[in-house]
Length: 115
Length: 117
Image (cartoon, rainbow over all chains, first blue to last red; front, side, top):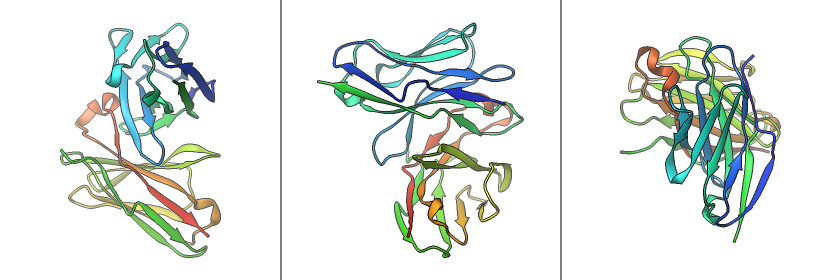
């Protein structure tokens, strides 16, 4: 069964420092991976996706993610964190079972950036 | 370009009642999916519609149903509400063309916060 794991419930980082939010996946076939961010009482906003090609994917708001096939990981990164980056981050994988738009989400990681 | 619109934003219902939630996808998007978000279970897939047909369904009881109209707008209905149905219900739309669905991102609405009392 396809699954995504986010091993950290919360990540704390000081403003200006680099941040990493971890994600590992388990899928059969090629992985199609996504990162979303959720601010309080809001829906999910798309950040970036990995489909194929370069292992380093660049996305919105200065975020990027590194795909590592051997470690089955897709960690979200940003060189310099902002207080406004504080939010809930979700990693997701597309269910490869047929022509479906179903996304399987991780449990989420709360990012807290201290000023 | 307008985003995904969900109405209403907030709802309070009593156990046993039924509720209908509405979702208008981004113009040109034909795939609409619904998700339930709760603190305990996280984000769980409810169902997906494409061209008025349900294409996939999550592991939810039959009290949860949905439909899609010819203009791609979608509704989901929950009958005989239970306290455990209290959640944020999220709708997502995607611009899908054939096999390209796998690499197409989904765009989410702001959700409907349902509280069952």
